[in-house]
Length: 389
Image (cartoon, rainbow, N blue to C red; front, side, top):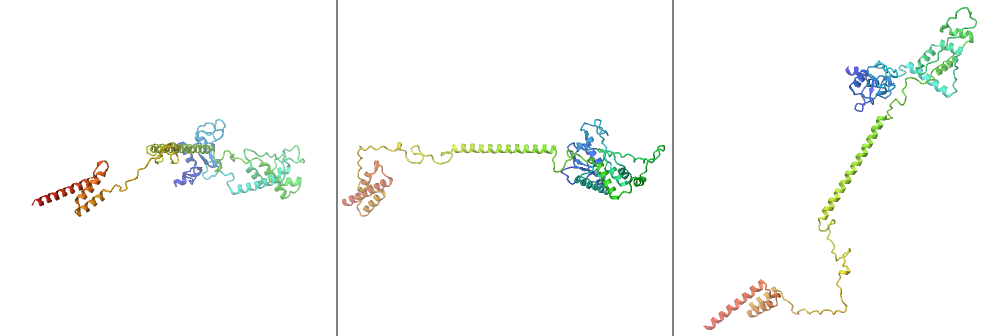
């Protein structure tokens, strides 16, 4: 029940609640007092004929925000009339009123007929009505209630309908008697008496001409295209917001590019610093000696110079016997020792000892010489004691 009470013909555009139902005028007024409704809010209602408009341009709503919807001057929200342009701040009180110019089916049908007549009149050469209407048009306008209702319905404050003078008095009337106003019911009789019977198609054509003359002015209460806010059009604040968003995106992209450049530069600096600490430089390869060129070949200035007149040095022939390995010498000495030729074994070891470079003896050779010498000494001692016996 509370929702039904709060509902009404006023709609406030809200992106968070795009399918919210319409609210009453009291709800809109309360939102304006609480600051939830601003001058840039987009609303529609009976006073806008359900066209979307900014709140500072809506009659009946703009003064609640302290602005006149007509002249834009500052006003008091409690005032009923603008002190500058005298525009009224009244608002329709009907809850179900949608602000349509033709609220009923009958009014819509009459407007459709009027529109078709206007289209046909524009397609053909329209008949311009005279400044002074003829007696026939006066009589038909007075006799036809449908024509009177059409004229009154199509009349707007912007273009008032021309005033139809009363029908002319016949010349046969007495000048002394005062002229009596002709009632609307006697108009057909007078028309038949003056001009004869009138055909029905001619009456319909004349009614159409009267409607065309009365509806030549634009229909009133239609908001200007500049005042209405179409969903396909973006208002000025929306354009400013889009421009600000575009500038913010451009600034963010610039900041991101600068950050990426700084990171790449720091990475290169770290790589150069780490490469300088390696022995081979940044690439990690062994540097080429100075004597070698870029291709790794010896440079000409580093090659030894050979004199053609200098005699070649004589090369000494190698020893035919050649040095023997220590292992082979020890092996041969042990074979001689086993054969009982201990003296020859010791002589072989002594020969290798003398041929050693710088007089340096290996431990194995020295141990082997000492062992054989001890063995020879024991043999001599044994032979000496055995001979004495």
